[in-house]
Amino acid sequence: MPFHKSILLLALGAMPVAVCAAEPFEKIDASWNELRQRSDVDGLEKLIDERFVLVHSDGQVQYKADYIAQLRTRTRVNGPILNEDVKVRSYGNTAVVNGVSVQSGVSNGQPWSGRFRFTRVWMQQDGSWKIISSHSSRIAEKAR
Image (cartoon, rainbow, N blue to C red; front, side, top):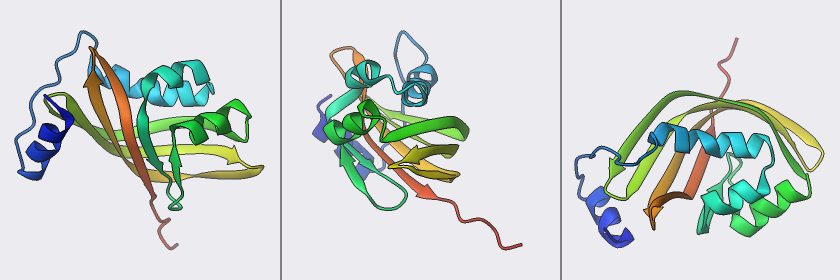
């Protein structure tokens, strides 16, 4: 199904359908974090679509080339990443993943950590899944 039809189905509130893939989709989605933790640029190059858009919790927007360059030059280093409450919905060749991520790292020499709600959008192309968008929002710490 072409990408524009998937978006139309999403907009019309189509019911999710099961993800059909030889490998369980949860494993494919988990590879996103595994590759980022290892700064595996070659693996990420294959996993990330050329039109990829990454929206960080601070509102910064990055595209594939910028994100890969950060990892390659080690100006961004991801620490442990733990996902919680992950839900996957599939609409034909498009899958939307929501959850909570607990993670830390260093960007441009500045350490960061936190809990983040995330949304990732994947699209199946030529028999393989590619991540096309990722967005995270920091979950505010409760006042003590």
